[in-house]
Amino acid sequence: MKKFILAIATSAVLLVGCQEEEAVDTLDNGVVPQEVVVEVLTAEEQQPGETVTLQAKVTQGEEDVDDATMEFEVWESGFREEGVMIDASLTEEGVYEAQHTFAHDGVYYMYAHTNARGMHVMPKQEVIVGTPDMTKVVEDSSSESMNDMPQHEGTGHEQDSNSHQHQ
View 1 (cartoon, rainbow, N blue to C red):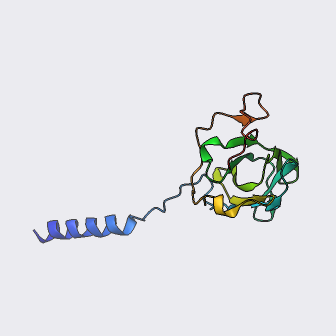
View 2 (tube, rainbow, N blue to C red):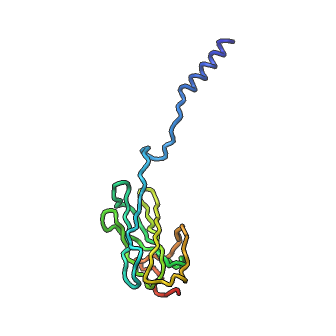
View 3 (cartoon, one colour):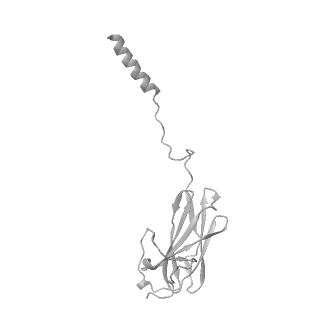
C-alpha cells in the first residue's frame, strides 16, 4: 500500500513540476505594437466660403504611417445628422488630406477616422468658422461616429449640406 501511495504522490509531483503556465499571446509575433497616433493639423479657425484643407498626420512610434485609410467626418454643431464623410488621401509621408468648404459662420466639429495597422483612431476637433453667434451654438459632446452616413464627398453621391444655413 505504501508503494501505491508513493507512486501516486510521485506522479502528482511530476505532473505539477512539468506543467508550465503558458503565456497568452494574442498577436502573431508576441510583440505589443506601438500606438497609432493621429494629429489633426487643420487650423481651428477658418473663414466661410473658402476651401479648406482638412489635414491629419498619422504616426506609429517614430514612423510615418503611409498605409492608413482616413475619412474626415464634418458637421455643424447641433446638426450632426446633416454631417458629411469625406475620403482623405495620402499627400506626403504620413499626412492625409481632404478638401471641404464651410458655407457659413458657425461652430463645426470633425473626426479624423483613421484605420491603420489593425487600430481605429478618431481624434475630434472643433472648428470655428467666421464669427458665429455663440448664443445659438449647440454644444456637441458626442464621442461616437455616424457609422451609417450615406453621403461621401468626392464620390458623386453626396448631398450639399453646405448649401443652407442653420440660424
